[in-house]
Image (cartoon, rainbow, N blue to C red; front, side, top):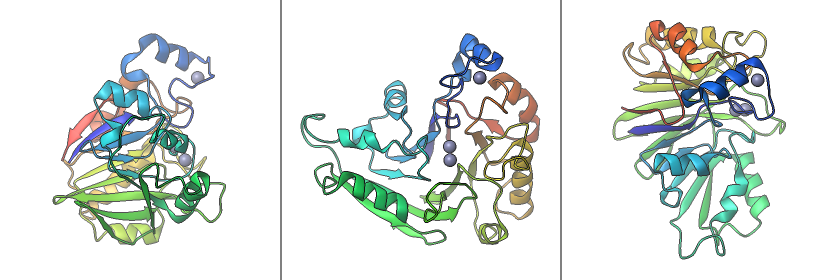
Length: 276
Ligand SMILES: [Zn+2]
Ligand SMILES: [Zn+2]
Ligand SMILES: [Zn+2]
């Protein structure tokens, strides 16, 4: 399974859209790995996890053909994860010819919203939708997907924000973005799983989930990693990659690497790739 990051920032981007603080000025000046689009990943050039607004530009930069994407998994309805407007471009007069079929998957209320928004248009857009439920396994093509409930706050009380356990050809990845620390039920469930890699949000950085329980910080993700290793869910040498950084609580790239590398974690950046 080949994974590439199309974005690694929280909702406002890093540097933030409208911010002129010292850290944003430094990030703009240093450039490179300090310029982060909103978070998403691509798996094997055929699956996207989340659809933020910069997917178009990053896909060009990283050689990902959006027309070849077969599956999109949506974690939740926050606009930095679900820029659904982009999907309207899958038909004439925005494309010439026929686009490959696309299956969009997510929590039932996300899928219901999508169906309502495109009202009968999905067929023309060559989009099929599949609603997923937490803890219910779904086989889609070469993938086995298990959504798990994130601890995250969304406006719609009927929506369950999801994280995903994604298995393909014997390799298993957990994409945990966005989520605060998991509850007991989810941890119990995870004990039965063997993971080959984890991608987890560290939005709260140096602050931590005590000030906002719906995101994790550095301390939370290190505790989570320790728990995974102790419970034989993850090997201590397996990739454990952080993403979804907020510039308010997360230092510049080089500083995060310096601080966290000794703990066996990787700081993702836009364009970062790894394989399991
Ligand atoms: Zn987010
Ligand atoms: Zn700023
Ligand atoms: Zn969110």
